[in-house]
Amino acid sequence: MASPGAPSTLPELPERNCGYREVQYWDQRYRNAADSAPYEWFGDFSSFRALLEPELRPGDRILVLGCGNSALSYDLYLGGFPDVTSVDYSSVVVAAMKIRYAHVPRLRWETMDVRTLDFPSDSFDVVLEKGTLDALLTGEQDPWTVSSEGVHTVDQVLSEVSRVLVPGGRFISLTSAAPHFRTRHYAQPHYCWSLKHTTYGNGFHFHLYLMHKGGELSAAQMALGAQMHSAPSPLTSPCFLQDSDNEDFLSAIQL
Image (cartoon, rainbow, N blue to C red; front, side, top):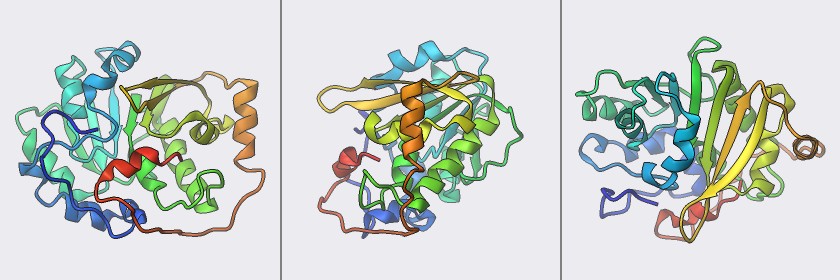
């Protein structure tokens, strides 16, 4: 999962998985981010570049959600896509990334909650997220029955993504979540996009979802999306203890 330049020591883990949803955890984790190597969730740029680049154009205005200290934004710049804005709700990591990439003034870094983006509508041609939704859902106890809170959180993010995308814009989501768990979140008609899926990676496969704003969902996708709201579960904030001393367990979270 880590890039070739990833640190040899594992990052500090939260006491409970739901800690991945808390800004305090990320502020603490990234306190030395300016001096540490990038940490890549679900593969570095090279692992999905062949799938991603055909969906991008050099003049695209690209927004990266929950950037963390990933090198993705810089890799996009080096790959010929210079107009990249990256947001994270940890002001600590945003400050660190501004320092790390001070030599690339075209890259922009903003402290922002992905549930309430501070951008005008129709601001971006492409929105990318890699592991951000996974982190927001780590406190869920049952991948088959997501809590009302979890459903609402994902809807907040995806509604904002749809709002800031231009007509014809693309939303690309990179995740560990397989279609039978994640498609129902994306397949909501009010986002006004089509939905495609593919996999990448060797051994364990990760998932790439591609949404085109202005496209249409299939009947099967619409049916899956409707299931998300057919039997709402109680509003809860479940947490459970980790059973691993590293973050490989996140690969098995199918939300």
